Length: 310
Image: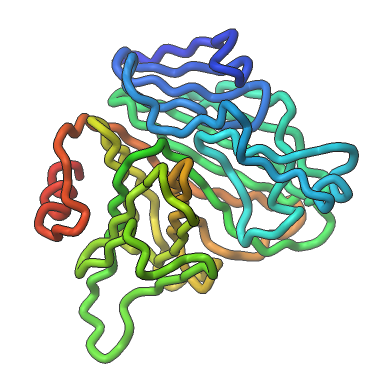
């Protein structure tokens, strides 16, 4: 199918966006802030991304204002975004509230925000919509500072309420040696009813009535995760490079949920980037129709869903 590209005057309260569609699937990328891939879904159907129309997810602490000047504030906005890991404040919470430049480079659309002069970083996201409606994403971070910096590219998809996430576990036969890494954040209760740890999969429910957040990370060598939302499945794929260093005790995939959304997060290799050097992390997002309910604690049902979608 042919890919159509249209600059939209306005989407919700995000201002101008660039719209890509193949006649069945559409994606909108913000031009007045971010950038964020703020909408991804079937035309006329559900947006798999959460949109923070009320701007409730905000970091406007004194450290942000002092570091970036004035009354600056960072807004989550929702959608898909690019960060650098590991997470620190105020560095991570760069207020990306300014217009974004974009250009067509072959079949790719490259979105470039203002440079983060305070952090010595220049970020950009290249988006390609494939004929089947899937998105090929390239996340770039260039060191524009004067000293070497160690970081990993961090690609975060903020997903709409009410879905079920499926994350595969490593099943390598390693004998007496460990075969997987699990990182846990201080606020994560391992008895939380939203999460299920099975033999081959971890599932996590997004519940709008949740009282506390939950986050874990894994060295997901399988390189995929799924989010089932009503009649739509989002498939997120990337490459885990075995033997390379990853942040947060060695994880390439992290997931976070609270009452508003669920995040599926992939990470690139944690490495030292020299001044003038660019680093890249790739992933793909794909949508499929999936109109049945999966039991989040039934390993056979989970396995069946994975086979149907991959």
